[in-house]
Length: 404
Ligand code: ADP
Ligand code: ASP
Ligand code: MG
Image (cartoon, rainbow, N blue to C red; front, side, top):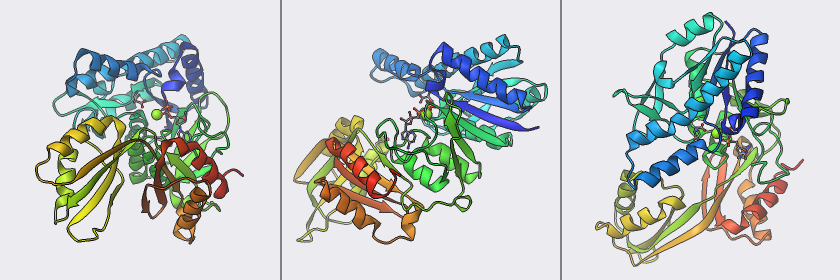
């Protein structure tokens, strides 16, 4: 059996006419004698609407009920796709993740898929059926519906490809593939033919929402090649694969940027062992994700300044937690909204000296001040004023020859 997993994102199933196009794409694979497994996200905007409803009904909506509510968007999209395929004469049906079941573990809103029961899907494929499976969700050990984080349908597709040993896993979306930077933000962005898991993981974690970061981890661990392509334009997309398969002569593969970041600085913190842990422990307990962290070396050995970034939506909560923290003493708390993190990513920087210098020089030439820096083997991130994001993207894209 030649199994292919096709995943359709929200924009690909955003309207009835788009769902008809999706059904035609699926039919194309059936004609080529593939056994097709379809994973769908909710119609675009639906998940956000459902989240708004949960917030309107209670300021403290139960996480378990949140999962029941927001997972319902996928149910609508899957039944519409299945209905259209049946209309076209195919044997198709929708499957809710719990009916398979797709098993998850971890907390509500942010579970992980750890197993998928192959039996029913496999039997259905053998009979020539096309299963249309709800992405983004599963069922946990308490038999409660669980969701796996925003954008999670990508991971659903990749893990179905793993457990059902698919030959191909194709992520259909509203852009032609993975670009050097978000093509909706920069028209000079270029489609990348092939990208390594490691680079894609960095790009996704650092703001490229075209793929969900967790899904790339799953693909990397299981060595699953992923093709990302457009639902609307018939052109080759991007292959996400292992580093060894790729020939790329560019130093930098892509640039990511974030929105809605905020910077928190604690000035004059009493410097003693364990102080950073005391600051971050209650934040992590409250599921606040701390991103970039810098601690200045204290001049007098007694006090230090500590800066970190968080998502702006967590700013008020962070402020309260830091102020209520009795384990730390500091002189001043500074909060700054509207900062943006720009990251350049590429395995090429491992073997090329001077990349950091070129990045900093380019920003300096454009009069863009760097507030915080963080690096890893294959990425350099800087925090800048949000209003300079576009200017920085344009300049760095040119500097690292991504325009050509
Ligand atoms: P889907 O609904 O198919 O899951 P998403 O909205 O999650 O689609 O992801 C697709 C979007 O990701 C694109 O419309 C694009 O604006 C954005 N994006 C951000 N960075 C990149 C990038 N480097 N390459 C391609 N798209 C990107
Ligand atoms: N519908 C879900 C979301 O909007 C899952 C997904 O799009 O993959 O996050
Ligand atoms: Mg997505």
